[in-house]
Image (cartoon, rainbow, N blue to C red; front, side, top):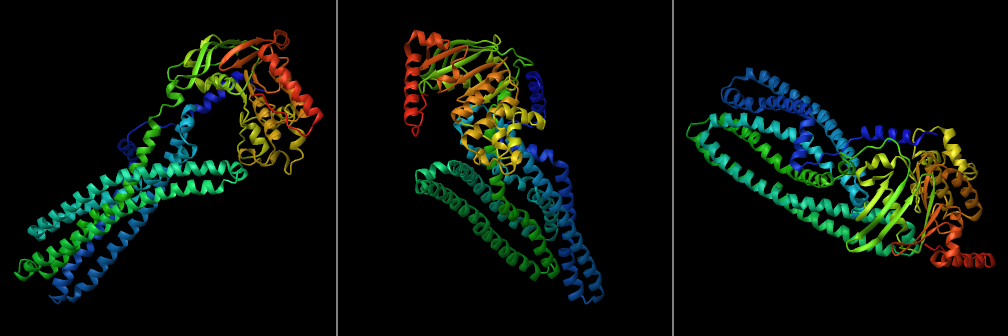
Amino acid sequence: MATSGQAGHSADKQAAGRPRVVPRGAWREARALVARHRWVLCGGVLLILIGRCAGLILPATSKFLVDEVILGGRQGLLIPLAVVALGGALVQSCSGFAVNVILGIAANRAVVDLRRRVEAQVLRLPVREFDRIQVGALISRIMSDGEGIRNVIGAGLASLIGGTITAVVALGILFWLNWWLTVAILLVLAVYSAGTSFAFVKLRPVYRERGKLNADLTGRLTESLSGIRVVKAYAAERHEDLAFARGVHKLFRNVVVGAKGAAAVNDLLTGMVMGSVWSLIVVIGGQAVANGRMSLGDLLMYVMFTAMVAAPLIQLSQIGTQLSEAFAGLDRIHEIGCIATESDEDMGKAPIRSIRGEVEFRDVWFEYVPNVPVLRGVTFAGRRATTTALVGSSGSGKSTVLSLIMAFSSPSRGTVLLDGRDLRQLKRRDYRSFLGIVLQDNFLFDGSVIDSIRFSRPHASLAMVKQVAATAHCTEFVEELPNGWNTIVGERGVKLSGGQRQRIAIARALLADPAILLLDEATSSLDSESECHIQEGLKALRSGRTTFVIAHRLSTIMDADQILVLERGQIVQRGAHCELLAQGGRYAELHGKQHKREREQYVNPGEELLPTR
C-alpha cells in the first residue's frame, strides 16, 4: 500500500487540475463568457454580416424590377435580376447554415464549461453550506441555471449584433430615399425600444424567482425520491403529492406572469408598432409617390429596407425573454460563486506533506445554534498510534467530536490541534488526504463493487482491492453475488444489505491507508459473527494509526487505549475499560445496562439489541 504522504501528494495533484468558479456579477460573468468565445462569436458575426449583405440584394432589385422592367419595359433585365437574387439567396442560406452549426456547437460547449465550473465550486463549499442549502437546489444551480447562456454565446446574440449592423446600413439607405418618413418611423421605434427595455427590467426578477422556485421544487423532489423507502413505509405518498403540487402551482403562477409579460411585448406592443409604421408608410410614402418625390420602385424598396431596420428590434423582443432568463441564471450562479470555498478559506494556510497523527482538543466549545453549546470545554489528546473511544448517550456530542476532527466544522471556542498545530491554520484538503473514515450512514456511489472500494484510491490495483476486501470480510459475500466483483451496487448501495455496505465502507477506508482512522459505529450493521471477524481486521488496521471510535457495543472497545464518556457535551469520565469499571459512574452504568440487554437477547433471541447511542 502507498504511504499516507503519497496519498496526500496524489490529492494535491488531483486538486490542481480541477477548475473553480471565480465570483463575478451577472454582467461580468456574461462579458467573461463572451470574451472566452470571442473568436467564435466574431466569426459568427462575420458570417451573419455576409448573409445580411447578401440579403440586401433582394430589396435592392425590387426597385429595378418595378421601375425598369415593369414600368420601363426593359425585359432583358429579368434574367440578370433573377440570377443576382438567386445568388444572394444562396449566399444568405449557406452563411445561415454555417452560423447555426458553428455557434450552436460553441454555445453547447459554453454550457458544459459553465456546468463544470459551478460543479467544481459546489463540491469545494464548506460542509456547513450543504447543511444550509438543499442538495436538489444545488443540482438545479449546476444543471439548469446555465442553460440560458446558449442565447448569449449562440446565434441569438450574434444575430442581434449582425442585424444591428445591417440595420444601420439599411437606415442610411432609408434616409437617402425619404428622410422625413424615416424620422417619423424612428420615433415610433424609439417608443417601442423604451417599452421593451422597461418590460425586460420588470421580467428579470420574475425569471430569477422562477429559478428559485424550480430549485426548491427540484430539492423537494430529490428528497422524496431519495427517501422513497421512508415515504412508502409511512404510506406518505399523499403527503408528498400535496407538497409537490404546492410547489408546481407556485411555479405555474410564476410562469403565467412571465408568459403574460412576454406576450405583451412580443404580440401586443410589436403588433401596435408594426401597424403604426405601416400607417406612416401608407400616408407619408403614398403622398410622396403621388407628388412625384418617390417612384413606385422607391416605395417598394423603402418598405423592404424598413423591415430590415425593424427586424433587430423585433428580434430583441423575441430573444429578450431568453436573455432575461440567461441573466437571471447568471445571477444565481453568481450567488454560488460568491460563497467562499474551502480553498478560498484555506488560502495562505500552511500545506501538509506528512503527519504524525496526534490530535488534541484544548477547551473546545461548539455550537450549531448560537448560545446552545453542543460541546462544553472538551479537552483530551489522541496520541499517535493509540485508540480513543467515545461513548455516551444520544446527543452527548460524540459525532460532533468526529466532525471537528474531520475539519467539517471549527470550534466556537478553544482549539483542535494536529501535531501541535492549530487545525484551522492548516489546509483542509491536505489534512483530509491522511484520513480514513467509516461513518454510521454508509454512502456508496452507484457502480461496481470494485469501484466502490476504489473510491478512496481510484488507481489502486485489483490485488490491493481484494487484499483490503479480505481484511474487511467482503470476499465471502462478493464472490456469491451474480457478477462477483463487477456487481453494480446501485444508488447508495441499495442492492446490498446494510452489513454488506458496512464492510465495503470499511474496505474503502482500509484502501486509503490513513494516518488517522475514524470509525463512527463502524460495526453497527453487522451480525455478531461478522463483527468478530472485522474486529480482528480493524485491530490490525489500527496498528500504527491514531484511531477514534464511536461504538454502541462497549465490548468492541475494551482494548481502547482511552475511553471518553461524554454527557451533555462534557467529558464526565476517562480511562481504560477496566479503570472505568472500577470507578463506577456513568460508564459502569452503561456497561451494566448493555450486559442486561445482551442476556435478555440470549434468552429471547428474536429481540433486537438496542443501541445506547
